[in-house]
Amino acid sequence: MRSRLLPHEIAQYRRDGYVVLQDFLHDDEVADWREIFLPAVERRAESFGAGKLGIGQGFIHHEDPRIRDLLYSPKIGKLIGELNGFSEVRLLNDYCYRRPAHFRTTDWHVSMHEALPMDSRKVTVAWISLQDLSARNAAICVLPGFPKIARLGASPKPPGIDGLFEHYPEWRDVETVSIDGRAGFCCFYNALMPHATAANLTPQPRYSVLGFYFGSGETYNGNADMISPDYAARLSPGDVLDDESQVPVVWRAL
Image (cartoon, rainbow, N blue to C red; front, side, top):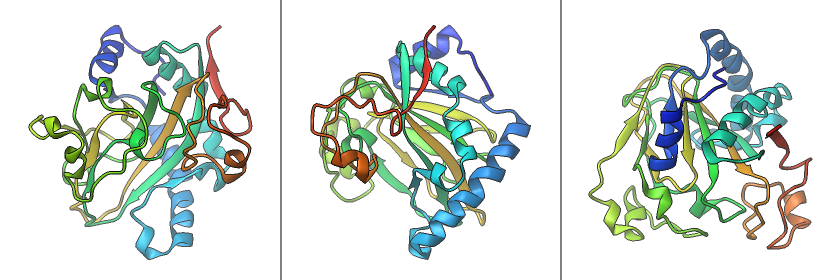
């Protein structure tokens, strides 16, 4: 696993809201991750029924404890810390997505508007592809630069692939960046980044793994979608998100 960032990579993330590391995982690591994650997400998807097979599944580490050793890695935490200037990094949630063969696009959306339990400009998503990715099999697409100006807080998205642009009409004419690469690449992007995914036009499903990370000190905003019901029941808006059993520290600076 890649463990260091170059200065220009940190600068790009802070300027554009995302950076892609094509050499994030080695080939043998990709094979190990696939062996662990693919059965886990298939088990979870089956429990939701065939109609949910295209939906991402959170808290995926409940399916296999080995997942904690991967997404909870201090190597990833250190990279998140360097990108944001954090002294301590916590993991909010872990996801695995399965895009079935011949599956539709995902509409433009902003994660911060939909699900996050804090209002922050410094939540980072680590999006890791478990296979070669291109425009043919649901590549991720982003609009660079907008995490700096996107509004904080919940903001329900109107329906449609371009529904988000009813909130941000100035984004309609911005050129899309399509992100692809070899299996094992990672796109680190800000949770305020407007993004979408292309359709999967191939006969094989496409798998990706996500971790949501934040710096210690963030406070709860009342949105419980990405935390456990037990944790949400113990929180009130304004409480610091610091329960080690729920949002554990994965890295701290020496």
